[in-house]
Length: 249
Image 1 (cartoon, helix red, strand yellow):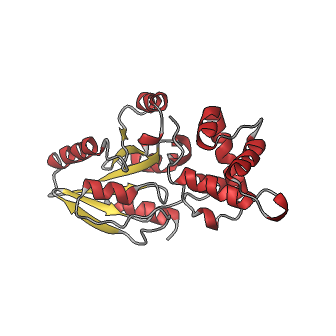
Image 2 (cartoon, one colour):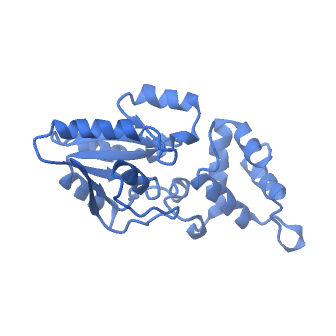
Image 3 (cartoon, helix red, strand yellow):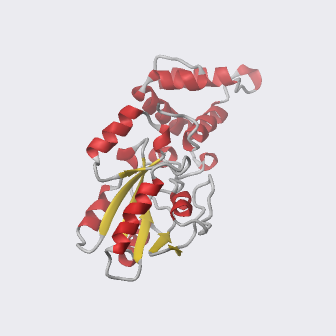
């Protein structure tokens, strides 16, 4: 199923839509088209949820709180912030005219939707995997007055291939040009703080290309003849980033 059919199905069948965003990359993973479409419908409520907040530092957390004062900052992995989010949703449900509050969740593949659902609705047993695309069809789970829709992760039309790799929307082994994605991750991290890369890999360099080569050397990723194994290095960097092994704090 394509991007907009999934989104429109969630919108049609939900009272409240949770837009799940990666706290490390809010501008990349926050889809403004979805926000506009939800806000244009008076009876729909939008709740922005930044996940993976355990992977960013206090400065970035404070910036998110300032820019999005009504958003919820959570970490599905660390189980933080979820209790407050659930309390907000239950409060909405108590003031809702219908017997239950229908909640739809929209976000990129592998952004943590199923893990969040398992925390909001214990016993739901939504399938969780580190590989994108685990959820194949729409299904409802219930917790008290809350009915939560678990839908497949969706990728907006026009999103660049590098962006898709950075957001964990695609398995690194299936990316056609992993080196390009890895270089973009290094560039992104180096702008945040050069210390992040040095702390993670002990690597340095004047630009992302030198840093990439130094990571390969530090890891001992070589092929016959002593040449750097660029493919293996790229996969390692992408995999570390997607699995949250590289923290921005």
